[in-house]
Image 1 (cartoon, rainbow over the protein chains, first blue to last red):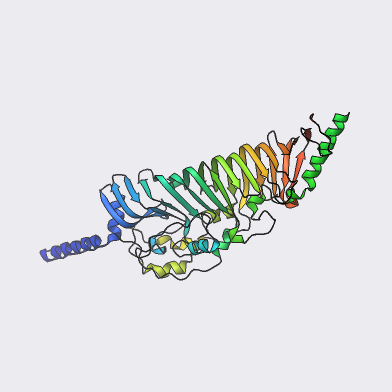
Image 2: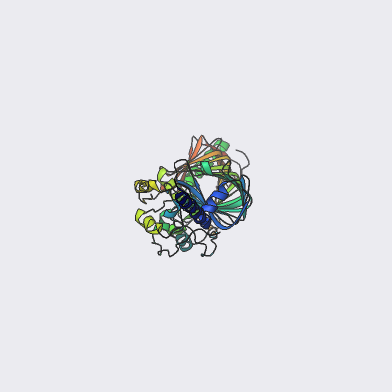
Length: 204
Length: 238
C-alpha cells in the first residue's frame, strides 16, 4: 500500500469518525450504554433483548449516567410489544412534541382512545411515567420512590414508588395503589388515529 | 319447640331473601367486574371500569397476573369488597389487552423508516422485520378476566337500596372468594357466613350466581337467628 493509499485510508477513517460523532443517536446509545459520565436531555434509550428485539424505550427529560446507574428525571418507559428490531420501525415521541404525560386515572373513553390509538402508543404494551427514577443497567431494574403512573389498555394504576424488573416484565408498585381495571379494552381500538407527522425521535 | 320453629322460620326467611330479594338481583361481586352498573343497565363499553385501591400491587405482564396486596377495596357504591389480597388472572387473549394489542402494520413501519434517525443499536439492520408479520391481528375478546381470587378476611357488602326504607345491607364473609368469569360464579369458602340485619347463615360455602341475577346460595346452611323476628315476635335466642 503506497503513501497515497494510506492517506486516503486515513481520510476515510476520519470521515467515518466525524460522521459518527455528528450522529447524536449513535453517540447517545454508546455513551449511555457505557459507564462514562454523560448528561443527556430529551433522549430515547432503547433496550434490546437477546434476540435483538426492542424490549422497551426509556424517554426522559434528563439522564445522568454514572457508572452502571442512570438517574432519570421525568422518565417514561415504553414497554414495547414484541418483535421490533429497529427503533426506526416505531413512531417514537418527537422531541418537538409536547412532553407526554399520563392521562388521569379514570379519564373518559375519548381520552383513553386518543392515547392508545396514537401512533406513538399503538406499538406499546404499557407505559410507566414517573417524576424521577434510577435505572440500573447491570440489573435492568428501574426504581423510583416518587409517584408513579402505569398505563396500559386493560389496566391503569397510580401509586408511590415502584420497581420495574424489565427482564421479567414485572412491576411492583410499593404503596398507595389505585387501580382502574377496564374490561372493554377493545373500545379503545375503534377509532383509527390520525396519521402522524413526526419524523424525528431522538434529540440530545 | 318454639325456639326450633323460630329458627326454622328465620332460616326460611333468609333463604327466601337470598333467593328472591330484588336487592340481590342487582349487582354483586361479579357485577363489579362485569361492566354493569348497579341498576343492571349496561354502561358504555369504554366506561366499564372498576376502581380498586390497595396498599401495593404487582403487575406481571409476562404471566398476565395482577396482584393487589393489603387493604384491598373495591367499591362501586352499591357493592363493596374488602380483602387482604386480590389476584386477577387474565385470559391469554385478554393478556394481550393488558400488555397491549399493538397494531403493527409492517407497511406503516416501513414507511416511517426513512424518516427515522439512524439505528441506535450498533449493527442493527432490522433483519427480523418480517417477524412482525407473524403477530396476530387485533382480535380482542369480549371477556378479558378469567378469574379473580380474593383471600384473607373477605367481606362482601351488598348495600341496601336507598329507596327502600326497610332495606338492609347484606354482608357475606369468608376466608376466600373465587370469581370464575366463564361460569359467572363466585364461590366464597373458608368459614363463610352471610348476614342480613340480625340474621346469620353459615354453610359450607356461599355461591353467588351472576347469571341468575347474583342469586346467593348457601350450601348446607346452618341458620342462626340472633335478633328481632320478622314475625314481630321478639327473640333473643338462636
